[in-house]
Length: 476
Image (cartoon, rainbow, N blue to C red; front, side, top):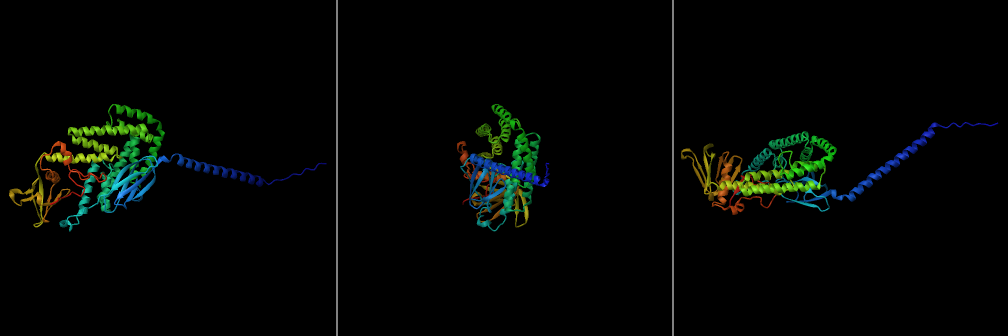
């Protein structure tokens, strides 16, 4: 007789063993995945170190805060490592000095890029006769806000470096952190950039939209709209990455036809921007872009030879906006602006402008005309009353802030005038005083006023102003 034994197995035992096997498999796969990712990262770092660059930043004087693309990265002198290749915005901020900024191009490789700033004092030391006055900061603020408004109207919102609306507004905020007009200017710049980016995205200009949103994020890091929009534009560019070859062909055709920068949205620069948005660092696109800059710059110099300074200045300022990495473009525009002012001034020997003389003793005003010539200044009131004559050798200082002119004599006496056209008279008087005799065209360039000849970091002055706050002092 056969006896059969039935063994009753607990179901939980089989499930427990199966669960342990599954967990061990999961742990093993997870470990392998982590190891693969780490190995890939090490491989990329070793094989492709040239994707990053290094910046060596020095300032004169040292001790300035250094900002890279809106982030504080250290105090000068400093070295900024692992910077992505491409264009970046560097700023140097030092108490008592003007804000300095520069667009830098970080090239792939191990060789560090040296960047130096020579910072300019916010306020120059006043003469002994004027040291009792504390009006200099207020005057500098008015001057910088005027420049900010002019730059905004030109469309120079955030470029070129050291001569744009945002730059001047930030300089004012360094002098006076609670200045409301400067804060309002920052908001205007931000809104203008947002609108430009949205319009570009709406018409399919992904390159302009991407670069504008990047500018917004660099200048206004807390703008959440920019971050989300950059992601959206990047997705659109990835979805159309195959269009780079098509845009390059259009760029080459436009270049061959001489359409370097115009007409809008149908020129070589526009198409190359699309190529570089789809394939950053495209060698053919970069080479053709550099050729466009050289061609347009040659055209601008031809305008200079023809005597068409207005057109040349406009072309150089446009180039400075489109090629912010080339600081010589803006510097050349400033040279031509000063030459234009000098040429206009030499055409006449004197100029009379409407002016109002402030009479401090009587707390009253006298309306008349103020005549500027090489020999001096003459204020003439109706019927010869309250007339004033100041010889050039008796003038120690001229300070022009917006529409108010303060003349200080060598004896410390001050005369104040107001008028909307005073800046034209002051500009003429400066040129006539330096070169009272006619100048030949060959020596014209040497005779034109140059205040920032050796320092491209210094913000370029307007034709009727100087870097020292519209103040002109002369040796006796």
